[in-house]
Image (cartoon, rainbow, N blue to C red; front, side, top):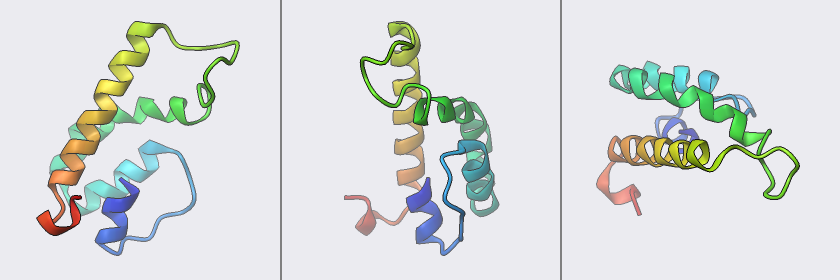
Length: 87
């Protein structure tokens, strides 16, 4: 998402807050809004579950669902960029 913002010269502050970053992305492409609204919950993974083996870890099913959503966001946002920058 930050790469998407950078490509379109949209400034953003240093943050892991996906709600904030997602809102900026939707100013460029409003069709991303439903997906990025769902992805906002992934913000927790940027800090709460940052390191494996910590005392608090998400249940396996939750982690797999979060990973699937993160991949969907990645693929969808990447598809909005020109072919020559996708690799």
